[in-house]
Length: 336
Image (cartoon, rainbow, N blue to C red; front, side, top):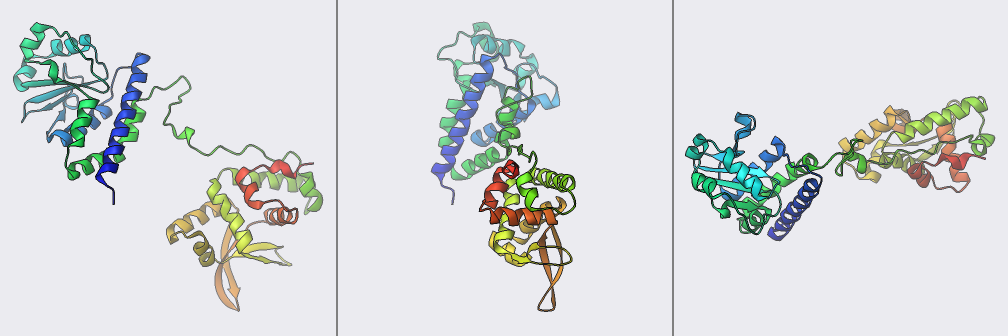
């Protein structure tokens, strides 16, 4: 069970990350927020303060002065990453007479730290009944979140699980090449880039058609292995280690295993298991067909193709870890 302390710690850490990210944006002059960010803070404020804020910019693009409004409580917010007095003055000066009539309380929520002191224009403050205490920030929001009930904390936790990564992406600067910190490109597996140059060590021991033809087959295998996830490639190694080696005078030597046996070794549910097998089958690395066990029909998974099967035989005969080869994808160990 997730505890109150864990949820509070996670929310506090995420808000601290967000504040740091805003500071970085401000240093390079990026202050604009997207509607997605406004909607995220609308939901967060609604849960925290039991309000019913709406995104006013969704009704009218770039609503002057304010972004969020709750007509029932007559409270409105400007959501901003800028903390300066000039920003507060600009917000108050942009308020229309209708907005001041509709909303008795105008707040400025700063995604970051507010200044210790403000010198807001007195005439603007008087017109909108604005107080310096209406300038709130992430720190004040965090203090209020910590005091919430477990139900409200759970609602915020679920909001963060659903939306927080997307908010971070919205707020991250993008460089000239399209890179940003939360990009999937920063976590994706590196594409293997060590195909065989000549594979003569291997091909000297194995010759089916011609050196050129077999080398082409080997390169094709490398490409297929390279485009599937590393964890899926490991399944081939498990088939070799835990399966059966069969000599077949018609189809050549092949490794095979029963799907049920392999599924239990991998400890995957049936759907996950067949998803992995489908990836391997689509890459022409295995094939699934009906076989016979004691003259009874049975489904079997085979390592596909004579070159791939012999490669696995050769690696084992040379004492080279098949698992390591499939993980690192360094096929230059086959070269002379």
